[in-house]
Image 1 (cartoon, rainbow, N blue to C red):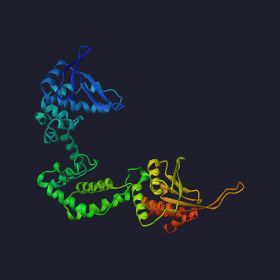
Image 2: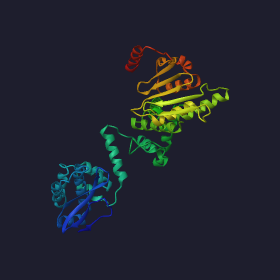
Image 3: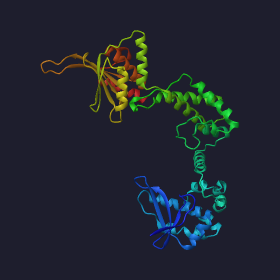
Length: 419
């Protein structure tokens, strides 16, 4: 039989229950292996209940001291009930000076107290009882998050000025640096908004005309890392030059915003290749290939015919975006009619072009010429694929050098990788 004896407005603050005639404190904390919340209980006395009912500050202090024990229990361990019970008298019944001294010796959850209104300055000076005089039953999680974010920055030695903080608030990254940035002018103090917009204008001018493409080798929505790094470097240099007073966190958040927006505007390689094909068609261009076969290292295959509504390059990159993975990094385009093809080795930033020299007759194996070439990122791959689907292996000649000696090619690849 379980009855709730005492509860507060916030459902997360520990409740007191009576279970089989025994008073217990119960709280939810952490999660199990299935990510469901765990519940912990331990016994208390009537004297402890009286303090919990009358003194919100002591109740919250007890909670903050018990939470580390819950964390230590992990996803399936048991709460150390003896350690939890040992906290009751020193926190609920002792003099304030002794409570302060206890909190100098034990682990406790500072963020819980800050969320419930604790005075941060007093907490940091070790005066926990005095810090809790303004405690509230309702929590302000944003206050705790801001404290945590500032604490992390302080640990790295990053001190924000008013404009720095305003830049982070404008991009939505004040609390979480990994948050995808966006423009939130309402989050900025109106007195600083015009300065923020001057910094943003500097960044926009610096990256005007730059773009970030997609890289289907890493999935349909993955961005080209080189494009991203190029824009990031350009924006950061311009902002630092024009606004030297900004700290690194503020500069980085501006470049992150510009890069994220550019990546969001980018078309996929499939769309870009189709647009380029439309442009060539307007100029009277005509694709040479009539039929192609795309395969990957896992045995998947996709056919493309000239009457397809999409270009061969667009279809191929969509195939790559759907299939590419850490264990699937070799893709082939083959023209069976012409007896030629290319094989892309994403793991090595290289490509092979394969030409049939002699068809197999009378049970003999065909004879091929295989030549290798280093590739410079996704842009290089796209150029090679587009050239091949338009003009076959012959159209790749000026994209070399092409090496037929495997040992010589491996030496060239090692020299590139060590630069």
